[in-house]
Length: 165
Image (cartoon, rainbow, N blue to C red; front, side, top):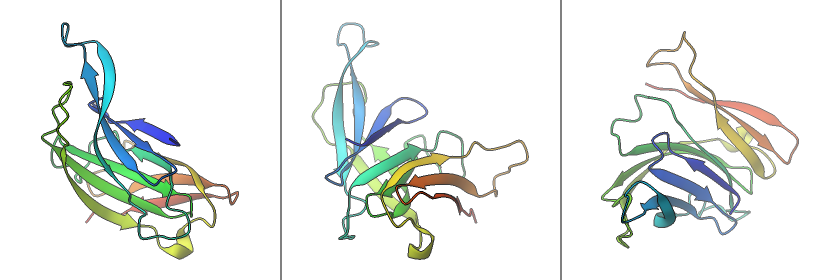
């Protein structure tokens, strides 16, 4: 595993790894207390970079922890993901039927929407090592773009934005 990030409500942990898997995990709570975390259970996995041949590893990710018009349900997760080949995507995941907090082995139903793929000329030329969303500022409104930064082994830092229409 290369990276992990919690959702704002701590219901899910997302991880990215060398094999290209972006996984969604839920916390399993102690059966007696229903409050003490005792384990994690993977409820969904997919490879956002499967169509890229260079290096489809998920090497960086960050979950958007703030309210956004793109998050229309409490089941929505907005995540920016970076790859070993320098590619980046913004993905909205809608998680339903995930039996949060239980040891159930039922896989969650997840809808995956790729909202943005960073064009090749704006992507990195080497492994993306860090991505991070910018905090909204007091001057931002519902139409303000979502902004994130990325750092790479190509020794560059880039600023990107996802326009909201």
